[in-house]
Length: 225
Image (tube, rainbow, N blue to C red; front, side):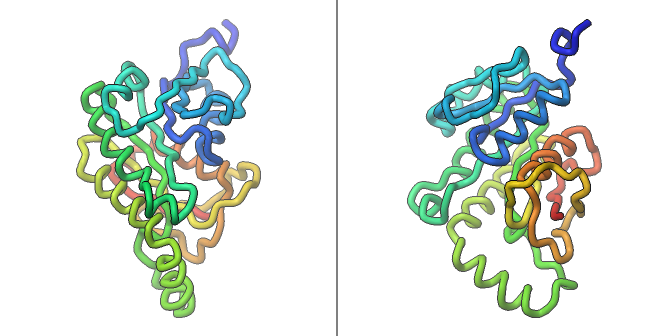
C-alpha cells in the first residue's frame, strides 16, 4: 500500500498551527505518517501544502469548549504550540492560559488523554551551574521585561498540571528559525545548563517525540541546542 493509504500512526490535533513551532509540528507529523487536524483562525496563514492526512479546522474562540469538541473527537493526542505574540498581547488579552483551560476540559469530555504543550525556559527553575550573571542579572531582566507573557505560560502550566491528562510541557529558551538538527539537548524535570537557543523545528521534534516517551509523562522537559 502507498504511504498515504496506510493507517496513520497517530491522529493528532495541533493548536497554534500557524505559529513558527506549530507549523513545524504539522509538517513533521505528516512526514512521520500521522494524521493531523490543524486548528487555526486563518487558514491562509498555515503555509503547509494540502495533504490527504491533513485537516484544517477553523476555530475562532479557543475558550469555547463546545467548539473544540469536534476537533478532538477520536484523536490520539493533542499538541499545543500556542503562545502570545508579544508581552503586550499577553497583558491585554492573554491567550495561552485561558485556551488551555478550555482545551484540557474538552479533551476530558472527548476522551483524549495525551497532551504536549510548549512553554518557555524562564518559567522553569534556574540552573545553578549557569553562573551568577545568568541567574542574578540576565534572567531577572528577561522575566521582568516579559512578565506578562511568562505569567500567561505559568497559568497554562498550572492548568495542565491540575488536569487529568497525561501531559508533557516542553520549555525551550530563545527560538531560532533554523532547520531541525535532531541533536538538541534534553533534560527531564529541569532546564538545560547553559541553554541559550534552539530552533523552532527542534522544539517541534521534542513535542512530537514526547508523545511516545513514557519518561516525559507528567514532567516539564527543558530543551536547548
